[in-house]
Image (cartoon, rainbow, N blue to C red; front, side, top):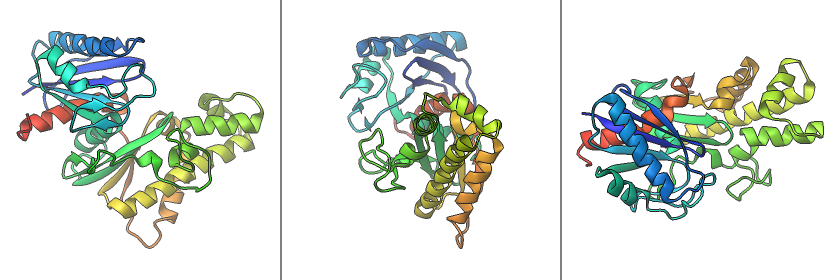
Amino acid sequence: MTVVGLDLGGTKIAAGVFDGTRLLSKVVLPTPEEGGMAVVQALAEATRKAEAEAGVEGVAIGLGTPGPLDFKEGVIRFTPNIRGLVNFPIRRLLEEATKRPVHLENDANAAALAEHHLGAARGEGSSLFLTVSTGIGGGVVLGGRVLRGERGQGGELGHITLLPGGPVCGCGLEGCLEALAAGRALEREASYAYHRKVDTKELFQLFQEGEPKARRILLQAARYVGMGLASLVKAFDPGVVVVGGGLALNAPQAYWEALEEAYRHYLAGWEAPPLRRALLGGEAGLLGAALTAYLEVRDGGG
Protein backbone atom coordinates (compact mmCIF):
# COMPACT_ATOMS: atom_id res chain seq x y z
CA MET A 1 0.00 0.00 0.00
CA THR A 2 1.21 3.51 -0.83
CA VAL A 3 -0.05 6.93 0.24
CA VAL A 4 0.93 10.51 -0.49
CA GLY A 5 2.25 12.82 2.21
CA LEU A 6 1.96 16.60 1.90
CA ASP A 7 3.76 19.02 4.21
CA LEU A 8 2.35 22.54 3.86
CA GLY A 9 4.63 25.33 5.04
CA GLY A 10 4.65 29.09 4.82
CA THR A 11 7.14 29.16 1.92
CA LYS A 12 7.13 25.64 0.45
CA ILE A 13 5.10 22.48 -0.06
CA ALA A 14 6.83 19.11 0.18
CA ALA A 15 5.18 16.00 -1.26
CA GLY A 16 6.18 12.36 -1.38
CA VAL A 17 4.84 8.87 -1.97
CA PHE A 18 5.26 6.64 1.09
CA ASP A 19 5.09 2.84 1.37
CA GLY A 20 4.91 2.50 5.15
CA THR A 21 8.65 2.57 5.79
CA ARG A 22 10.21 5.08 3.39
CA LEU A 23 9.58 7.78 0.82
CA LEU A 24 9.57 6.58 -2.79
CA SER A 25 9.70 10.14 -4.11
CA LYS A 26 9.97 13.72 -2.95
CA VAL A 27 9.13 16.98 -4.70
CA VAL A 28 9.10 20.54 -3.40
CA LEU A 29 7.01 23.42 -4.77
CA PRO A 30 6.67 27.02 -3.54
CA THR A 31 3.62 27.87 -1.47
CA PRO A 32 1.56 30.36 -3.53
CA GLU A 33 1.75 33.83 -2.02
CA GLU A 34 -1.89 34.53 -2.84
CA GLY A 35 -2.99 31.66 -0.59
CA GLY A 36 -6.56 30.34 -0.58
CA MET A 37 -7.56 28.17 -3.55
CA ALA A 38 -4.12 28.61 -5.10
CA VAL A 39 -2.75 26.56 -2.18
CA VAL A 40 -5.22 23.75 -2.92
CA GLN A 41 -4.17 23.75 -6.57
CA ALA A 42 -0.49 23.66 -5.60
CA LEU A 43 -1.09 20.76 -3.20
CA ALA A 44 -2.87 18.83 -5.97
CA GLU A 45 -0.02 19.57 -8.40
CA ALA A 46 2.56 18.44 -5.84
CA THR A 47 0.60 15.21 -5.40
CA ARG A 48 0.63 14.52 -9.14
CA LYS A 49 4.35 15.25 -9.45
CA ALA A 50 5.26 13.03 -6.48
CA GLU A 51 3.21 10.17 -7.92
CA ALA A 52 4.76 10.61 -11.36
CA GLU A 53 8.26 10.50 -9.87
CA ALA A 54 7.46 7.37 -7.86
CA GLY A 55 5.59 5.68 -10.71
CA VAL A 56 2.71 4.76 -8.41
CA GLU A 57 -0.43 6.43 -7.07
CA GLY A 58 -1.36 6.73 -3.42
CA VAL A 59 -4.65 5.39 -2.13
CA ALA A 60 -5.01 8.33 0.25
CA ILE A 61 -3.37 11.63 1.14
CA GLY A 62 -2.01 12.82 4.48
CA LEU A 63 -1.71 16.59 4.88
CA GLY A 64 0.37 18.20 7.60
CA THR A 65 -0.44 21.87 8.05
CA PRO A 66 0.31 24.66 10.54
CA GLY A 67 -2.34 26.35 12.58
CA PRO A 68 -5.21 25.12 14.75
CA LEU A 69 -7.37 22.55 12.94
CA ASP A 70 -10.96 21.37 13.22
CA PHE A 71 -10.33 17.68 12.64
CA LYS A 72 -14.00 16.74 12.60
CA GLU A 73 -14.88 19.22 9.85
CA GLY A 74 -11.54 19.12 8.05
CA VAL A 75 -11.05 22.86 8.42
CA ILE A 76 -7.96 25.01 8.96
CA ARG A 77 -9.06 27.57 11.54
CA PHE A 78 -6.21 29.92 10.62
CA THR A 79 -2.53 29.91 9.72
CA PRO A 80 -0.27 32.81 10.69
CA ASN A 81 2.00 32.62 7.62
CA ILE A 82 -0.32 31.68 4.72
CA ARG A 83 -2.98 34.03 3.40
CA GLY A 84 -6.60 33.12 2.89
CA LEU A 85 -6.74 30.02 5.09
CA VAL A 86 -9.15 31.23 7.77
CA ASN A 87 -11.91 28.69 8.51
CA PHE A 88 -10.80 27.09 5.25
CA PRO A 89 -12.33 23.69 4.31
CA ILE A 90 -9.04 22.24 3.12
CA ARG A 91 -10.02 18.58 3.36
CA ARG A 92 -13.13 18.84 1.17
CA LEU A 93 -11.42 21.04 -1.41
CA LEU A 94 -8.33 18.83 -1.67
CA GLU A 95 -10.46 15.67 -1.90
CA GLU A 96 -12.38 17.26 -4.77
CA ALA A 97 -9.12 18.21 -6.50
CA THR A 98 -7.42 14.82 -6.10
CA LYS A 99 -10.36 12.37 -5.95
CA ARG A 100 -8.72 10.74 -2.91
CA PRO A 101 -9.53 10.72 0.82
CA VAL A 102 -7.50 13.29 2.74
CA HIS A 103 -6.42 12.96 6.38
CA LEU A 104 -5.34 16.11 8.23
CA GLU A 105 -2.75 16.53 10.95
CA ASN A 106 -1.11 19.47 12.67
CA ASP A 107 2.47 19.82 11.40
CA ALA A 108 4.08 19.47 14.84
CA ASN A 109 1.93 16.41 15.61
CA ALA A 110 2.98 14.95 12.27
CA ALA A 111 6.66 15.35 13.17
CA ALA A 112 5.98 13.71 16.55
CA LEU A 113 4.33 10.77 14.78
CA ALA A 114 7.27 10.36 12.42
CA GLU A 115 9.89 10.43 15.19
CA HIS A 116 7.82 7.86 17.09
CA HIS A 117 7.48 5.34 14.27
CA LEU A 118 10.61 5.98 12.21
CA GLY A 119 13.01 8.11 14.23
CA ALA A 120 14.44 8.62 17.71
CA ALA A 121 11.47 7.01 19.53
CA ARG A 122 11.14 3.99 17.24
CA GLY A 123 10.18 0.88 19.18
CA GLU A 124 8.82 2.78 22.19
CA GLY A 125 5.25 2.38 23.41
CA SER A 126 4.81 6.13 23.87
CA SER A 127 6.79 9.29 23.26
CA LEU A 128 6.77 13.04 23.74
CA PHE A 129 8.28 15.21 21.00
CA LEU A 130 9.21 18.89 21.32
CA THR A 131 10.43 20.98 18.40
CA VAL A 132 12.33 24.15 19.27
CA SER A 133 12.68 26.43 16.28
CA THR A 134 11.25 29.87 15.40
CA GLY A 135 8.34 28.76 17.58
CA ILE A 136 7.88 25.75 19.85
CA GLY A 137 5.49 22.90 19.15
CA GLY A 138 5.29 19.18 19.60
CA GLY A 139 3.08 16.24 20.23
CA VAL A 140 2.42 13.23 22.39
CA VAL A 141 2.12 9.76 20.86
CA LEU A 142 0.31 7.04 22.81
CA GLY A 143 -0.32 3.58 21.40
CA GLY A 144 1.17 4.63 18.08
CA ARG A 145 -1.29 7.52 17.58
CA VAL A 146 -1.08 11.25 18.23
CA LEU A 147 -3.00 12.50 21.25
CA ARG A 148 -5.32 15.20 19.88
CA GLY A 149 -7.68 15.61 22.84
CA GLU A 150 -11.42 16.13 22.79
CA ARG A 151 -11.22 19.49 20.99
CA GLY A 152 -8.14 18.96 18.85
CA GLN A 153 -6.08 21.08 21.24
CA GLY A 154 -3.93 18.31 22.70
CA GLY A 155 -0.17 18.51 22.33
CA GLU A 156 0.13 22.31 22.20
CA LEU A 157 3.32 21.90 24.17
CA GLY A 158 4.76 25.31 23.38
CA HIS A 159 1.91 27.01 25.21
CA ILE A 160 2.27 25.57 28.67
CA THR A 161 2.71 28.45 31.14
CA LEU A 162 6.12 28.61 32.81
CA LEU A 163 6.34 32.24 33.93
CA PRO A 164 3.08 33.99 34.90
CA GLY A 165 3.36 37.64 33.96
CA GLY A 166 6.25 36.86 31.60
CA PRO A 167 6.68 37.92 27.98
CA VAL A 168 3.58 37.97 25.78
CA CYS A 169 3.31 34.98 23.44
CA GLY A 170 1.98 34.90 19.88
CA CYS A 171 -1.08 33.08 21.24
CA GLY A 172 -2.02 36.21 23.20
CA LEU A 173 -1.19 34.90 26.67
CA GLU A 174 1.96 35.51 28.65
CA GLY A 175 4.77 33.38 30.00
CA CYS A 176 4.37 30.44 27.58
CA LEU A 177 7.36 28.20 26.91
CA GLU A 178 7.40 29.52 23.34
CA ALA A 179 7.58 33.13 24.55
CA LEU A 180 10.57 32.24 26.73
CA ALA A 181 12.66 29.82 24.69
CA ALA A 182 11.79 29.83 20.97
CA GLY A 183 13.93 31.49 18.31
CA ARG A 184 11.78 34.63 18.31
CA ALA A 185 12.22 34.88 22.09
CA LEU A 186 16.00 34.56 21.87
CA GLU A 187 16.16 37.21 19.16
CA ARG A 188 13.98 39.52 21.26
CA GLU A 189 16.19 39.12 24.33
CA ALA A 190 19.43 39.45 22.35
CA SER A 191 18.22 42.57 20.56
CA TYR A 192 17.37 44.17 23.91
CA ALA A 193 20.71 43.14 25.41
CA TYR A 194 22.82 44.43 22.51
CA HIS A 195 20.63 47.45 21.59
CA ARG A 196 20.42 46.29 17.95
CA LYS A 197 18.85 43.51 15.91
CA VAL A 198 20.49 40.13 16.64
CA ASP A 199 19.29 36.89 15.03
CA THR A 200 19.84 33.39 16.40
CA LYS A 201 22.76 32.72 14.04
CA GLU A 202 24.65 35.72 15.40
CA LEU A 203 23.62 34.83 18.94
CA PHE A 204 25.18 31.37 18.53
CA GLN A 205 28.35 33.00 17.16
CA LEU A 206 28.54 35.41 20.11
CA PHE A 207 28.05 32.46 22.45
CA GLN A 208 30.95 30.57 20.83
CA GLU A 209 33.11 33.68 21.28
CA GLY A 210 32.38 33.58 25.01
CA GLU A 211 30.25 36.73 25.14
CA PRO A 212 28.55 36.76 28.59
CA LYS A 213 25.20 38.19 27.47
CA ALA A 214 24.84 35.57 24.75
CA ARG A 215 25.71 32.83 27.22
CA ARG A 216 23.09 34.05 29.70
CA ILE A 217 20.35 34.31 27.07
CA LEU A 218 20.97 30.94 25.41
CA LEU A 219 21.45 28.91 28.57
CA GLN A 220 18.41 30.42 30.27
CA ALA A 221 16.31 29.45 27.25
CA ALA A 222 17.70 25.92 27.46
CA ARG A 223 16.77 25.74 31.15
CA TYR A 224 13.21 26.80 30.34
CA VAL A 225 12.97 23.97 27.79
CA GLY A 226 14.26 21.47 30.36
CA MET A 227 11.84 22.79 32.97
CA GLY A 228 8.92 22.56 30.54
CA LEU A 229 9.81 19.02 29.53
CA ALA A 230 9.98 17.96 33.17
CA SER A 231 6.45 19.27 33.75
CA LEU A 232 5.19 17.48 30.64
CA VAL A 233 6.77 14.21 31.76
CA LYS A 234 4.80 14.44 35.01
CA ALA A 235 1.60 14.82 33.00
CA PHE A 236 2.15 12.13 30.35
CA ASP A 237 4.93 9.80 31.59
CA PRO A 238 6.16 8.95 28.06
CA GLY A 239 8.56 6.13 27.29
CA VAL A 240 11.03 8.61 25.80
CA VAL A 241 11.37 12.36 25.26
CA VAL A 242 12.62 13.58 21.87
CA VAL A 243 13.79 17.14 21.16
CA GLY A 244 14.21 18.50 17.65
CA GLY A 245 13.81 21.68 15.64
CA GLY A 246 16.33 23.87 13.90
CA LEU A 247 17.27 25.95 16.92
CA ALA A 248 17.84 23.04 19.31
CA LEU A 249 19.63 20.78 16.83
CA ASN A 250 22.02 23.57 15.77
CA ALA A 251 22.66 24.87 19.28
CA PRO A 252 26.08 24.36 20.95
CA GLN A 253 26.64 21.42 23.28
CA ALA A 254 26.42 23.70 26.32
CA TYR A 255 22.76 24.37 25.42
CA TRP A 256 21.99 20.66 25.60
CA GLU A 257 23.87 20.30 28.86
CA ALA A 258 21.88 23.14 30.45
CA LEU A 259 18.63 21.70 29.06
CA GLU A 260 19.30 18.25 30.47
CA GLU A 261 20.50 19.61 33.82
CA ALA A 262 17.22 21.50 34.26
CA TYR A 263 15.23 18.51 33.00
CA ARG A 264 16.74 16.24 35.63
CA HIS A 265 16.63 18.88 38.37
CA TYR A 266 12.88 19.34 37.99
CA LEU A 267 12.39 15.58 37.88
CA ALA A 268 14.36 14.95 41.06
CA GLY A 269 12.68 12.06 42.87
CA TRP A 270 10.89 10.97 39.69
CA GLU A 271 11.98 8.42 37.12
CA ALA A 272 13.14 10.50 34.16
CA PRO A 273 12.50 9.04 30.68
CA PRO A 274 15.48 9.01 28.31
CA LEU A 275 16.09 12.32 26.55
CA ARG A 276 17.06 11.98 22.87
CA ARG A 277 17.78 14.25 19.93
CA ALA A 278 15.46 13.96 16.93
CA LEU A 279 16.81 11.99 13.97
CA LEU A 280 14.61 12.84 11.00
CA GLY A 281 15.42 16.53 10.57
CA GLY A 282 13.51 18.39 7.90
CA GLU A 283 11.74 15.28 6.60
CA ALA A 284 9.86 14.61 9.85
CA GLY A 285 6.84 16.70 8.85
CA LEU A 286 6.47 15.04 5.44
CA LEU A 287 6.95 11.54 6.83
CA GLY A 288 4.46 12.24 9.61
CA ALA A 289 1.86 13.55 7.19
CA ALA A 290 2.24 10.39 5.11
CA LEU A 291 2.09 8.22 8.22
CA THR A 292 -1.17 9.90 9.24
CA ALA A 293 -2.83 8.66 6.04
CA TYR A 294 -1.06 5.29 6.08
CA LEU A 295 -2.21 4.42 9.60
CA GLU A 296 -5.77 5.57 8.93
CA VAL A 297 -6.05 3.37 5.83
CA ARG A 298 -4.27 0.43 7.43
CA ASP A 299 -6.52 0.50 10.47
CA GLY A 300 -9.71 0.96 8.50
CA GLY A 301 -10.21 4.69 8.82
CA GLY A 302 -10.60 5.31 5.08
